[in-house]
Picture 1 (cartoon, rainbow, N blue to C red):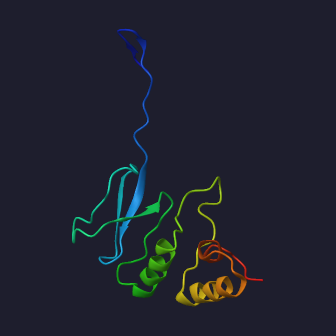
Picture 2 (picture 1 turned 90 degrees about the horizontal axis):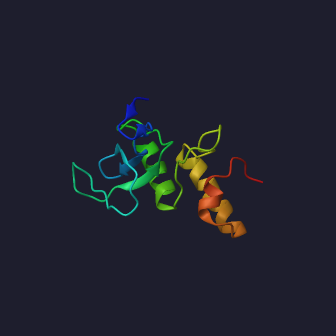
Picture 3 (picture 1 turned 30 degrees about the vertical axis):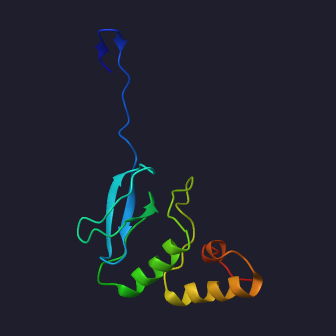
Length: 121
């Protein structure tokens, strides 16, 4: 820290960056978090979906992974960093998604909660 004209200056942290996703383009963009601003895809102008700060995009060519991701994001599941374990369990295959959707339908559990359940009873 260098002293400024009025005393020591505080080091400022840059604004947090988080991931936004364009599902039709299968693209992800890191941008500054600002919930009041609507984001649009620079490729197709479709609205971007907030995915969270702990999101790691699948390869663009992996269509099944993007379909799985689409179900998760449309159900309201986000990839936020937890304390030390990351965002927690997220299904990686359409089969895992289907199993959890069936469980939610049978039990009445909210879909978003069933989708992040690591084990089914």
